[in-house]
Image (cartoon, rainbow, N blue to C red; front, side, top):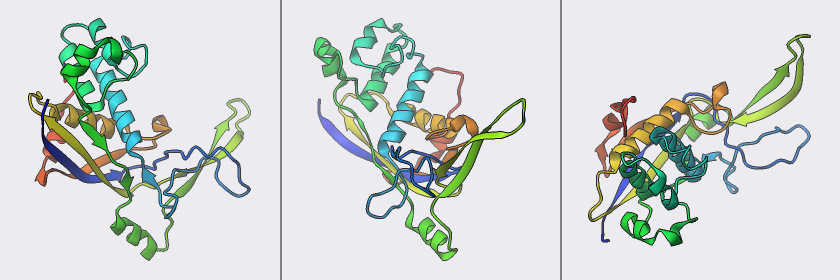
Length: 241
């Protein structure tokens, strides 16, 4: 299996609503927020981990393919392919080509591992665009916001259990990029990438999506410098990937 090209997809990821991707800090600080967002340790600027984009996009595509029941909620792996309907296997194999297969069971499926080969997609951390940071600094605005939330007692009509959640505000712009390794003999993999990006736009990223967090859109998407945003916008649902 020969590597013949590495394509680079670049663009802008713009927030349409506040985004919360937690830092994992569960320690309470007096005067601080209960749920801080993840930040760069040196600049203290919020960013979107590439693992968050990859994990959400993969999960959405697995739901889209209808394989989540067969995997019992685990990430799709080589050992699951033989349990899938024949019609689903080609798309499932492409998903494994793009995102990689779960290590469990790989040793018992060496023929499939050899057929599918190495992971094609690499997701990079999304940093805030310098121009957006300058806009915030020029207006003396912070790079994050704190949103207060609570629960309402339905009978007494009073607020309980207040908590503060840190978010990157709507309007923030991040630099988005990933790379796609192209191997000889690969079938068309880009349509699944476009579908995954559209699913991200429709469902959002990060925590509390059902409460309006994490709505986003992609703009200025280019593959090796050529505009490809139209491919994402043209994705329609109701048909198989």
